[in-house]
Length: 113
Length: 112
Image (cartoon, rainbow over all chains, first blue to last red; front, side):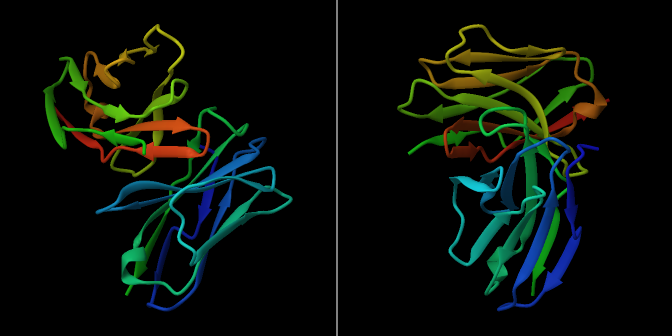
């Protein structure tokens, strides 16, 4: 158990819908990262927040957005969902903002029908 | 643009033997970080080992070690005394600032 929690574990929804994925980092960690793992694209870095501020941005679509709240939990919002958004979404956390060890959560499996 | 390539989609090794997983990357930067992550069937991502590019010494963590060849942009992972619990997908990753890039992964099978 990494100490990073993600909810929900599974999510099934329809195209065009909007969903919110939630992540609670390990106690004491200030950074939260979001990743998407799909069969065809592999593991892609989406976005990083550090202490409430956006720190780094990867291949995140405009339909996706994220935020980190004062209690340091983070939410990833996915809107206007398409079939291709079906994937495993991971959250990871680390103490700082750079290269410290990232601890991954168990992931949220999203299926868009 | 930075890329990370794992040329071996699958590999098998006999239990207790040694196996090396390959990773090459492309970057014009001189200072960056490289990682190997393990993803077992549980889908949990676990950091195996990391290497700072400015360090010439190869990183080692128990049975796991890397062969870091900066000029060749190569970062291979050696697993010694392979165990059944080592069976997993292994991902090589590169990070510099806001660039975090993963390879496509190598699926490692351990044969009893």
